[in-house]
Length: 157
Image (cartoon, rainbow, N blue to C red):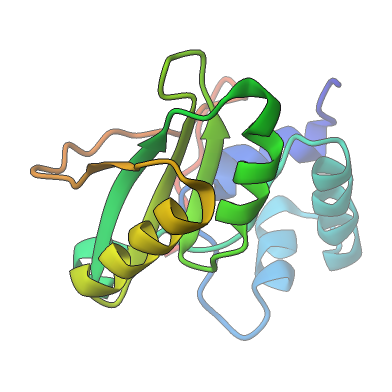
């Protein structure tokens, strides 16, 4: 899929910060010199095409509670079943397959470490697979944004 000019501008301008106001899509439209309906239609199209997976905040997990990266070595024939089980937890904010002995990875975020331990124990009990628990020791911040246009506009404050 080739992104429309509006989609490219929308991604460039707002991938690092949505307007924090009562009508964020209207503010986005004003910044992009288009209508709120055009912004919403564009976002729906990006989601439908699989280009956009979510719109929402990224929280500093150490301020929100506890977080850990976990992995399971899942037999190939059970991968979708186990992934579906993991995805049932609202505490799971990433869940993805990898080509490795540990082929299913997920991130858990919860109110405290004990809560995460309970979930990991439940998953081990339910699946018969022991999670590899990899809590973060040090955060290294990287910018995961990608400029699509020649000039990158600064997000709204």
